[in-house]
Length: 218
Image 1: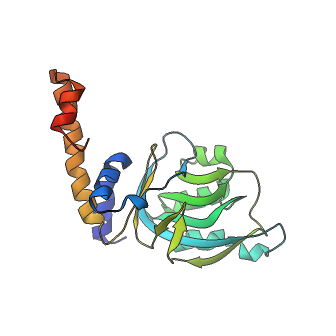
Image 2: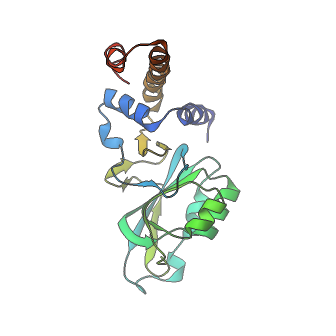
């Protein structure tokens, strides 16, 4: 991760996804908010640049064990990156406890998967943040083939390109296109400051109606 992306990631970590979503609206990018993928356990969150993975899914025995290249996706990620897996929402596991341990050990910041994952208790124990379409015991071995790494993918109906900044928390997941991330975060920081100012106004005695009138983007 270069210094610019590191700085953007550190700034984005401090901002809630609803506030970033307000800023995405400013840029006409509300289509970069994932509609259904959520954290697999309470309290999980992350921010970082995307390392994208495209998978194909078939019935048991369709592919070889060698096609299930989970190690390759971990190898492709650096410390602070988010592994982003596209598999068209298939209800089969692409990642489990051992893979989460390996990714965590390498410094990978999290997993965003439009597919299933398993071994939830282990993932929680390893403190590896995961946002996924499904929880399922079903293995991906011989069912999943890793096709390509670091190509444009579609996750939960949302375009993600390599290097896009992914931010996820208890509310949901947003994708900040890398070329516009600086401007989006700058706007979001102002909205975040407005949120904090609005709380102070409420504590000082303003009604919620008055605060909503004064701060139009909270």
